[in-house]
Image 1 (tube, helix red, strand yellow):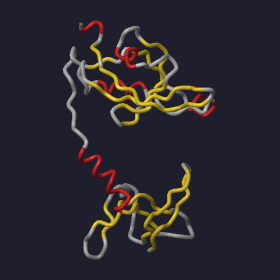
Image 2 (tube, one colour; image 1 turned 135 degrees about the vertical axis):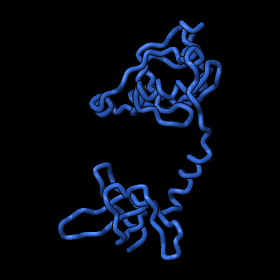
Image 3 (cartoon, rainbow, N blue to C red; image 1 turned 90 degrees about the vertical axis):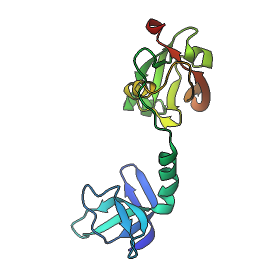
Image 4 (cartoon, rainbow, N blue to C red; image 1 turned 180 degrees about the vertical axis):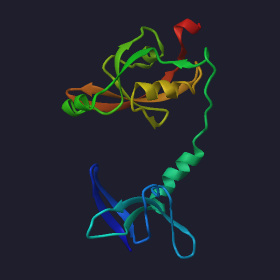
Length: 187
């Protein structure tokens, strides 16, 4: 076992990991790594699989995971809003393809193809061509994800949207506060 190890993955290199010879099997990711005193020291995350090496696992140190755990524990739990009271942004969203993201160096999120005039998004300054990347501090991965998140907000609530806007060939993030609206059919 060792500290501050780096592991290369398909998504890049992950560093500052705990290397352990404790058995980590498929399905153990996210489980606890305990020391001999029974204290939580890490979160199991990966097993090195190779014919030459067996039983080498990696864990995220608890010191690195603690801020994320605290944020999750302190996040306000929301309940779905009843139909007719759910929030509406006033945009026509579209999913971005992996090809478009790579080709145009775009951030992942929801591409806005149309903004309803005088709607919530329009009044907040959202424009056609913007990409919504976060809503209320949570990443937005696609149109379904955005629609799902909106089910937990009432018309009239304020929410911060992080959008990415093209500026001279580069996408730059900015946070806009939106006062959510109700669907035109619900008014």
